[in-house]
Image 1: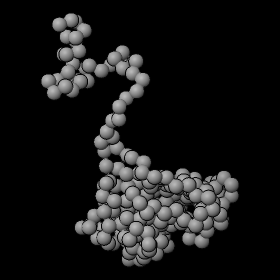
Image 2 (image 1 turned 180 degrees about the vertical axis):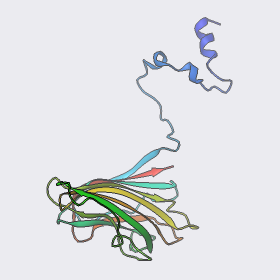
Image 3 (image 1 turned 90 degrees about the vertical axis):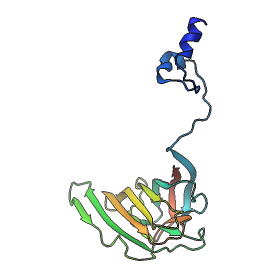
Image 4 (image 1 turned 30 degrees about the vertical axis):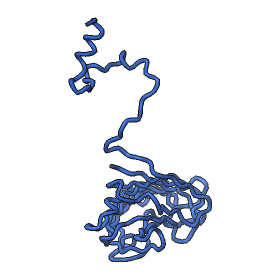
Length: 218
């Protein structure tokens, strides 16, 4: 057995797995492509939707038992009308109707460009108590050209038929009064039926532009 072959063999288990000691900068320097690698508990992009003066953005496929957690990322969501909140609701019938009962809690912080009126407060007007209304995601986004909102919404085990469906939201928006506005909302869809569709819309405006990505987390 040659020296090179012997060195290689010393770094491979009897099961054919390469040991960490057998991989270094030199051994991978000439690699130009890799076969598909499992992401394990990683994140997988399922679909993306970009608004163009859209009444709403709805995800009616892809929410099923494939993933334990679903993540929605909001990128520069911009309203047609000034000073409107973005909202969301779930569906148990594939998006035919939206209005699942929600109970939630909410708080927010804000600070304006003049350095005035810093606040950190519970927001009773933004939460729901056994309501089928759309839930707030961000408060009063401005519609000037440079104003938008971003955020992340996690939905846990939507296909469970045993438990309620928890969600956690963290977002930030350029408030219409020239302020940095951060929102922290969480709650649950009070149903043991599977949630299989989610709808996002401003409560009194079209979505002028912006993208929402939906990811699955194993």
